Image 1 (spheres, helix red, strand yellow):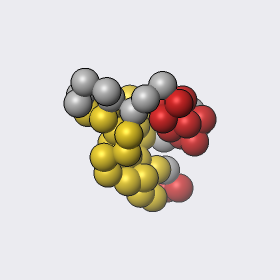
Image 2 (cartoon, helix red, strand yellow):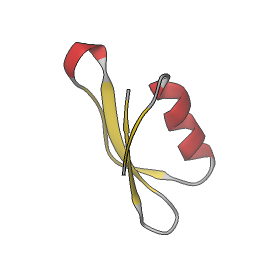
Image 3 (spheres, helix red, strand yellow):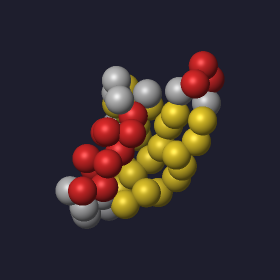
Image 4 (cartoon, one colour):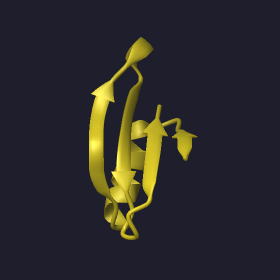
Length: 50
């Protein structure tokens, strides 16, 4: 699942607060954007880009 977000830092903090853990990143990519992958408590991967 890939999700584009308006405020990357806010979205990342939200997922971390509700129990996700960082899997990869965050990394800076094109045009000042960032991306990362998180795992939820059930081991599903969630990708954030924004």
